[in-house]
Image (cartoon, rainbow, N blue to C red; front, side, top):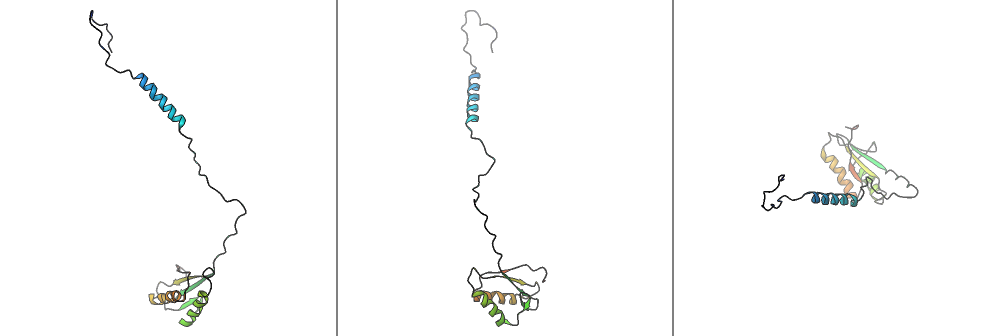
Length: 142
């Protein structure tokens, strides 16, 4: 900034600094326009909730527990199965039902049982067409 007056007879020098005030004013106007045009943010999620009477709760499935004891003894709902044909007859009764009506077979092997006994039960179920079979943890039977 030049405070003094120019020397006598000398031409005034052009100002080399740019006037920043109009640029700042334009930037402020643009920021205000941006703030005004931003859509309002919602902190909620729109959900389409069902309308009408509540549906009935699903019927719990029928569960059959097949326990394999440490010595290979097979228990069907806590009743000892005499031999392999008796087990096959029970599995046949399950597999003859429609897929939707088949009860769930929960296989609960003892942690000390040899795998061949458990594999035999699973192979029998697969061969006869039992669809709903699964291994289940067995805390009280171990």
